[in-house]
View 1: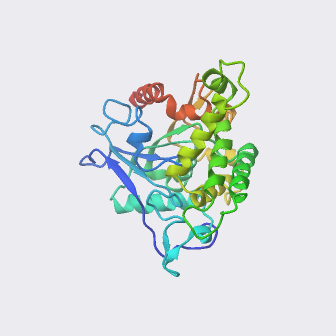
View 2 (view 1 turned 30 degrees about the vertical axis):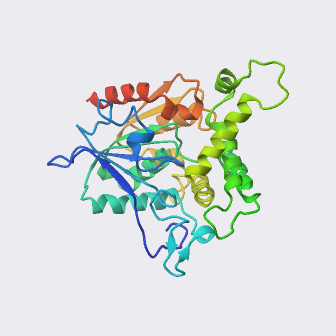
View 3 (view 1 turned 60 degrees about the vertical axis):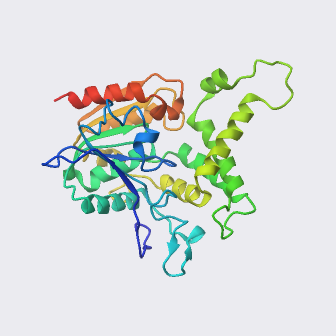
Length: 327
C-alpha cells in the first residue's frame, strides 16, 4: 500500500446490477462515500435504478465496498492472518489510492477493460479522480459530485474533531468490535453539523414551543443520527477512513500541483456542486471545472448542504441523463 505496509489477504465485497453487453461498453462504476456500502441502488435510489440515469436495463453497474470499511471488504474487523485475530487498531493506514488499487484488482477480476462512466460523490469523487489519473485510458467519462481535488484544511479539521471524539471514549482501542461506540456517536454528531447547515436545521428542527427548557427537537435529531450510525458502522473503520480522506491530494508524488494534474483528466466530465454545501463548498467544484479540460459544471440549488448529493437524487439524475445524451 502507499504507506509501505501490506495486506497478506484481501476480500472485496461488491454489488453488480444489470448485464454487461457483448462489447463490454456499458459499464458504469460507482465509487461510494464514507459510510456507504456497495448497495448503490439502496443509498442512491433516484440516481441508480430502473428509469433513472444509471439504469440496470441499459448499464452494467458495479459498486465495490472500499478498503477499510466494515461492509465486507477487508478492514479493521477482518481477521489478520498473522495473528488469527481481528486487526482492530493495528490495521495499517490506507489512502484513497489504496482503495483505487483494490478497485482495479476487482475490475481485472470481472474482465472489465473499459469503464463507460466512472462516478462518485464526496469521498467517492476522490476515488474517481484518482482512478481516472491512474488508468486514464480505461475511463470513458467522469461524473464528480460535491467533491474536491485535495482535502481542505477545513475538512481535515472536521475529521480531526471527529477522531478526538472517538479517542475520548474510554473503550477506544480495546480489542472489541464495540470499542469507541460512544465516541462514534459523538463523531457523527459533529459530522451532521457539516453535512447540513444553519438554514435546513432551523427549517426542520426548530421547536415551536417557546416554553421548553430541555429536550429540544434539534438535540433529539442529533442524538438519533449519532445512534443510527453506531447501529450500522464501526468506530475503527470511521477513524481509519477519515484519515484516508485527510491525505487525499491528487498532486502528491506528482509534483504537488493539483491544478496541473487535473489537466491530465482528459475525459468528458460532469461536475455538480450543491450551493449550500459547507463541507465541500462550490469553490472546490469551480476549481475542478477550471482545470479539467473537458468539464461542465452545474450548481444545484438545495437547502440540504453536503447531504444534497444524495437527497436531491431526482434532479441529479435528470442532469446526469441529459449530459450523458450529449455527443
